Image 1 (tube, rainbow, N blue to C red):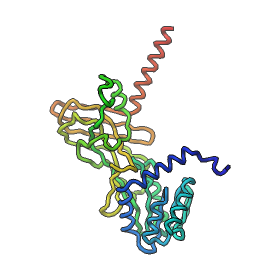
Image 2 (cartoon, one colour; image 1 turned 120 degrees about the vertical axis):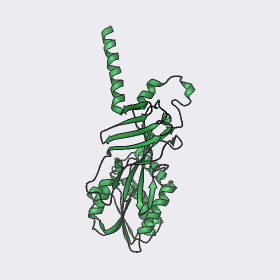
Image 3 (tube, rainbow, N blue to C red; image 1 turned 30 degrees about the horizontal axis):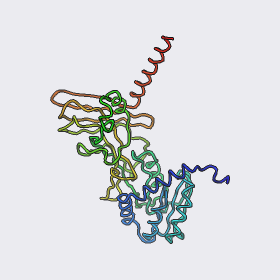
Length: 325
């Protein structure tokens, strides 16, 4: 009983639900399977980092890999990996390591390293330091990294649902909109449509990164828009390079979410929209500018701005209450 006292039922349910969603994500699964099939040769050695359910470890062995090492730090997933490995008849070729990858020591012998430790904004699950360590210590010269690069993509979007939905619930919501527009959030499928072409914000080459990155930093993009007055924010997602000409977009995937950086709608209809994002581990803020015939409109956003306005209102209320006592 003492062995299991550390683990909670809610944690167990959350990780199983998460991995169930991954296993049901057909586009993601098909893309990673094709990528592995392109590079795994009979007798290859494969390292699967953040193995999760063990899916790619099993697939690699079934594709002909002679040795597969599946590294997964979550102890609750080890029995699941063991069962799937046995059920698929590859137990003699798959070794499971339950440990933080930063503390794993292996020989530099692997032909392929695969990892899906990619958060919706790339850095949440430490994909860059993981792949840099795997590349520098465990991947043989000429071996393959999957993914080999991450591109941050962005586009203006129009939301398909109003605030609140339906709008008739409240005739006026400006005060709420002003706060909501300061808070980035995930976008659900069917909640938005692109209102401009996708643009590249940044690119991380995992095969050539010299220093592991942990944050996006300062990035920007611009668009010429015919209906800037319909824009509700900028959406950001990822494109993963799984092979020389093979890419997987996280937009539309059940495994990843698109991130919305909201803005309040512009008054001008046409113009050139410029978006600048300052994204760091402990703070984020963004700014937009629209240059059109009626001049330039600018706005700045960030959670700290919303919090500051709410906190200031609380302090004013406290002073007023104290003064009236």
